[in-house]
Image 1 (tube, rainbow, N blue to C red):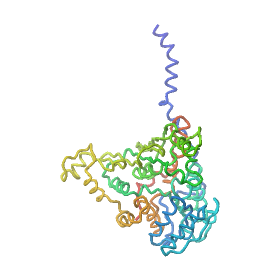
Image 2 (image 1 turned 90 degrees about the horizontal axis):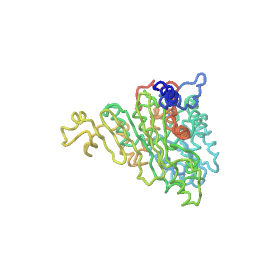
Image 3 (image 1 turned 60 degrees about the vertical axis):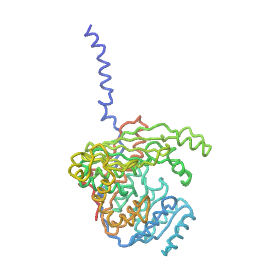
Image 4 (image 1 turned 90 degrees about the vertical axis):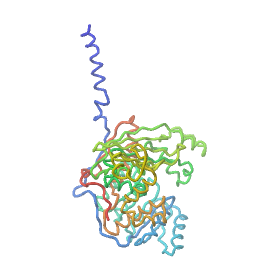
Length: 463
């Protein structure tokens, strides 16, 4: 009887074992094509170009983000604003009038249609193209600008699909031109200070990081030209705006500087908030809205570390650009509470002698946090922090971003962020959509350096 029962159950046992996702996990990973480098083409890790003492800048896109960028550049020595471009004439005129009011020469004006930017990238007297258009124009303009011999700085996200990502990488490698994504959040004061703590070993080894973009956009949806942002969320599923949360975490984890992201898994909720907004505010009934209200993505790295990234632009939640690092000796957190928690041995060694009632399970007191932030202030902040706060741009981080970009171009130094950062932080847009459309299957994150991810020993800002 026992033998008969064994024979009857054996096929079921074999089927359960063979069909187990754990047994089949390696085969279930979805991979996207990685194009082969052309003969003679090499990576642009630590790319250095000839110094440009006076950086001539052309701005393309003067809607929500562009005017602020132009204003910030007027506060940086050695910058000439030579061209302004937008679809709308009024946007160009307004920014140009602002230059004249502060005593600067007016820039050449380009406007009229969605292809007018092509005249700007072709200008012979431009060193840097600064791109702040809608998302879908970011990569095409950046690719053409590099082909036209210009360095490019592209607002986030700089690329929306894998074809654009690889095209930006290949064009940068072929032309030897810088291609930087304008990710301002890596320059926020808390993030920069925490990065320095990590690089000094204060928080131990970072084993887990979290980031997010949680920001109800209901007051802003109608401000996007031709409704481009809502349309993208309507037509695509996944984390369509990942770079603010992912960028600072990747820097702290030395992604493509000793570690790399291997694969991701994404889950989402159903779509409720944005379809409701379209119905209530515009009278539009949408049955096939693609993007869910809340998307969560988990990533594992080559060195056995993990990252969690969230996206939510419709829920009634307070603004939260989550930044969180878990290290073996300490913990850093920003939003909704900014603070540090430290392991007991770190407390004993560093601060307990000067403070009472400290333990490893709570945030350190505010005065201790401020003392630590002063002690570990990042070197790039020390000379420009006050000016950054005065000029502004999300509290000053935008100015630090622009200042560092111009500083490195003027000195011929590698930029703080390269085209591989751009690729890694943007790739969640297409790869999370693939994961979600395949029942949250794991999706491989390519090595965008194509073999160079461990050539560099950690992230270093050039001085």
